[in-house]
Length: 302
Image 1 (cartoon, rainbow, N blue to C red):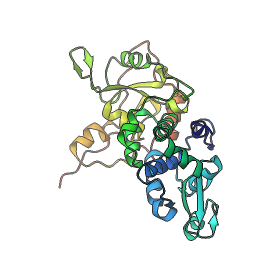
Image 2: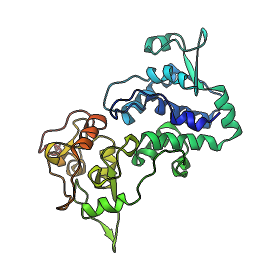
Image 3: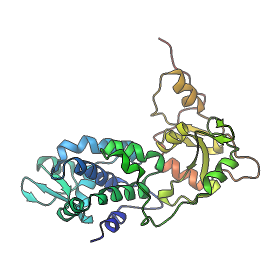
Image 4: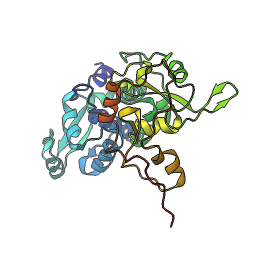
């Protein structure tokens, strides 16, 4: 049985690039728990808060329930559920899972194969990360689900159907003249830029192309905040800052809230700016909540 193929083909609700990482997040969480206890079952009532936190932090900006993947992942052959009544999931209702004592764990054949070949766990985790999340979030996700940090450094899987264009970073940084499009940071050591990265607006994992009009040159801080949905791009290529972001320090105001409404820095003339279709995808699938009004006030002093 090809467990990597099953991992790559998890059945998810998709339409026009809509994000639905419910099953990948649950499977990553289960792999993390298996790494520390190969026999433990995950009782729904005991892990519900953890799974909801993962969906809130790494899922799309829409309300969702961990009950959905807890029940439906069974259909992919990698997960099983038992209740106080015996084997089988009672359904995807939160109340049903709670009241029947539902507990899930990796399917028996998969557990046996992971014990026989421990490297499979890392390969499955890497595949899930590559197929569903941007690289800037991989380390955070490994930590959140309890996977050992070295998994984030494993070699990219050859079974990922697309390969990144390594030229994109240089093309994007050149287009933005080696300046962060949000704050203008342009640090170097000698001739080498430091702390500058090429960010995909529409994530590569969701068919975002390795093109300049799908890229931004961002400093490391703003790249992470962009992929977490704290920052976005609005009409007129002006910066959006989520109302859900909370930061009371002068640094949080200077580096985040004060950016609301500012125009992007770059790209240079003759270079395509971010395409409206990619900008719209990020706003719908990544940006969190509503944007702050332009010129958000600074922190109040006690």
